[in-house]
Amino acid sequence: MDIENDSGSPAEIRTLSTRTWLDGAIVMQCALPGSTLEVGEVEELLQAIRGVSGGRERPGLIDVRPGRRSSHAARRRLLSAAGTAAQAVALVVGPGPTRVVAGLLLRLSPPSIPIQLFETVEEGRVWLVSLLAAAPTSKGRRPIPQASRR
Image: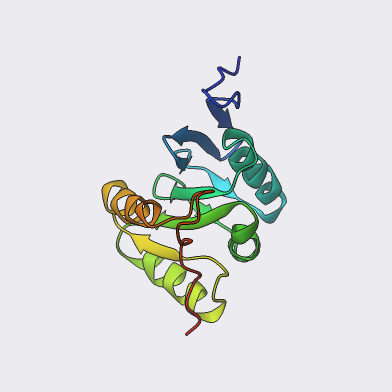
């Protein structure tokens, strides 16, 4: 049974490979232990993000460390669709080969939104909170900066 949060959206959505929930203004998504992600599952993950956020674009923190692997096609699809579901993404990958692959993919296909790599959830959260502090409101504050294309 889905429990609704204050916005009337589900408190948590589980897919075959992730769990997604709203923590304040930040959408949290965590890979399930040992899960794999294929390109066919990407739309389900994006729907989970939209579902818990009530359809609003919010900053997101994605922790891929518990997962086992994701296909190259799935990573590229997620990167290309990131701007349709989030304002910015903190991607928690930990050290090692996963971080190298993620960094290379971000350099080869610059995203349309800010995406940063982190080793811990806490580091990613601090970055997202700093972006939220400078984010726009309907009262005219300035927006979260667009990703810089290098």
